[in-house]
Length: 317
Length: 283
Image 1 (cartoon, each protein chain N blue to C red):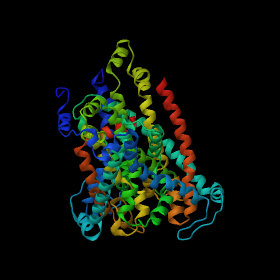
Image 2 (cartoon, rainbow over the protein chains, first blue to last red):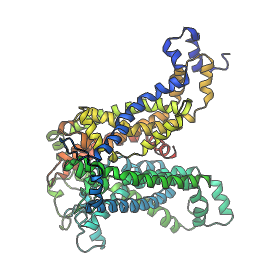
Image 3 (cartoon, rainbow over the protein chains, first blue to last red):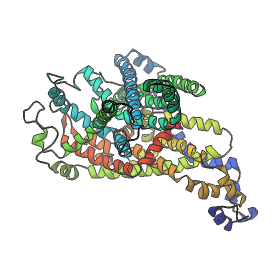
């Protein structure tokens, strides 16, 4: 018998106690369901207290007129009709969609490009892969401050570079101009997101057998066609999952805009989350803030469902 | 490698790779150079003739000294460290148990619970911070590190569970069955046989959870109010900016020092971190 057991099971066997003599708790936990219940308990308690309960509480808040320090009364859907008619809310919805769409496209294209570059063998590859992830792991708020300083109208190093390369004649007011502010926010988000896309896509690329490429090359396919007809279809399922994650995170983005522009100038970069914060915490209109963050939910749900359908279809192909 | 002439290699490989590296790393260089640049050089407009952006002739540690002596930065570092470690420990504990149960045990509604955890994994923090602030106030947790230690696991546990589930599934069942045949109770087989084998997965999840906690902003911003309770990201944002005045030297020093613990952990466990990212995507 001992010849079958690995070293660790032998160690366990020495502590073997006949089932009847085991402690009551051990005996109770022999039942699969009971053990599962005990194992799930801490997770379920925490998630119920701090996810499910706040979610319900959020809905309850949104149908009252609660402010900070003032218990509210039931007002039905007033908050929702109020934000529905609110111009700033419309701007925030439009900004959020634009921001999510544009950054996702750029992150995907640049991330894929970087992944393809890193998928080759060259000296210092491991080193470079490690360094490239830095924008993603460094706390967003802190790196965004570095960008804010780089965008400063008077001291901007970017302006200096662009001026000396000859692209601009006068200064760019990065964060002060409504259009440029949006561009700046998008640049920083793309900068932060590209490494995540690149590293995840690289992992996907590495699962594709090089033989497929060789076979296509022998059949005379050029680089672009090999990418289009071999790499891309095989990479699609992974790509869709990455995009799903990234879209959710970008859609609910807060810290980047909060630090860079605070939603300004004149709400030009106001997103869902920053507007909810401004109303709910800034001015203390808890119920309206809750209504706005709840309004993210159906849109997010729609996006997620569409993407999950795509993912399922891509996986069954 | 790229086939064909040498220039093709330059155009399709070296130039874009260099551009990516410079673009991705330049802000960090800028952080460092701003930190050690004396104020009189720092506040020289970019259009001034003697604006020398990429180096400094008079490096100084004054900003770092100001940051450490005149602000609560070191307190924020300790707060963040404590909160991140505690939240990571709780999340790993819960994630390990739940991941094991969901991947190895048969119990009613297992599929449903698994899906529910996956959905919470997708719930962004910005969706819940307002009602959660209300609840934190009711639980009398406001302005205490426990407000964060108990709420961070809500986005860390789903991630840890998901990652570890994948890891447990890759461990052959026979390993455990062997121990069970030899008379080990279920929970012992789990703790002494499966958990040690899963250490790489646990490390990935732990490192990822730690960096996510260090990075978290909105909960810390909303739940904490007194300066000595704040975490690094919130402290830097609120205390180093007075109205419209930005103390750029100190800000960049804070950004630099505040990034070091995360970068340090990351540099030791790059491989685990990368497998954490890819594992979180593959599910």
